[in-house]
Length: 276
Image (tube, rainbow, N blue to C red; front, side):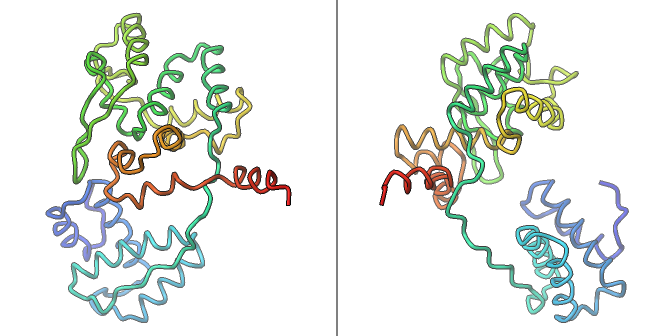
């Protein structure tokens, strides 16, 4: 990242280098703080709580609550760096959702796979199967290589933990044949460079096109929703939320509890079935 930042954030950038944050997180913190300083339009060394309140009001007028909180978290990290905890801003309280929205149904998932096969989109077909059969994040597809198919297992190194990814045996067998036919020896879902994963924009675009042809709402067809599909399916089969948290790489079971919630459609069906 080039140093096209406000001078006031350069030292902050250097401070962030020694923090145990991901590269993307550090870039976001720097970008958000630079925006705040731009909003002030004056020397940031004289920041007051009124400035923070004014900026928070500006964020609320422009962004969704979740985005507002994201900006405030970045700002609070900056205040920690300045040793100015008196400037820290409270995040907005967001009512906890009681439903999972846009949940893929089994029939919709099957329709997507059938349509991908019918349209000879084999790479997309197997990509979706891997996401939905293992619960991995889209960025972790880079770890799914031809070598991994020999054992069906690989490890992902996260910020705080190492977790094992397991690919079902029947899917491994199918993928081995897929790789053999296409002479794939490194990353299975690669772009032009056989050692680098497909661009996420390509995946997003092709999934949207597939959704249209399969008659599945576009808002349901995104990479992370297949992770949701895996999690819900796992809980339906085994009812073990602790093990699911471990598989998904969650640090807290509270994060995993989202998958215990029903969708709005499921709530509707259950209430209708009561026939009161």
